[in-house]
Image (tube, rainbow, N blue to C red; front, side, top):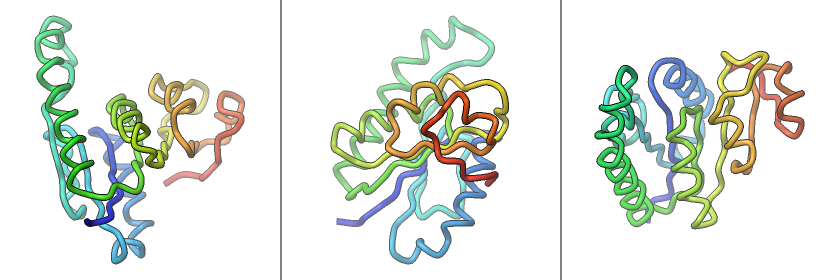
Length: 160
């Protein structure tokens, strides 16, 4: 069974931060397989494999979100289950968004390590995902020292 690290991320800034993290982890790549799980439009080609799912919500319509959510959620869980069965997942690393919560909780059921990096765009407020992941993640990193007051046990890692 292949040993893998799962990278859970979203589009925009989440994707950019994940790309930066991957560059810093390049030396580990010969020992581990890196797999990305993201929404359809956010694939990072430098990962060994990518698994995509439809967006969980519609940014412009609550009604469309209500219709889309169950199908997208089931698609996402199906991918996570497939990855759990196919690979020996060592850890889940995420730069957000909310999809990180689902993946982290899923793999915590199987005693896998979870690592979360609060977004670098936060200086004086917590993200909703960060609030939850602070309680869920085995390791929680912040990129701005000003967040230490909200996350006292977080590890300051600097900017990616």
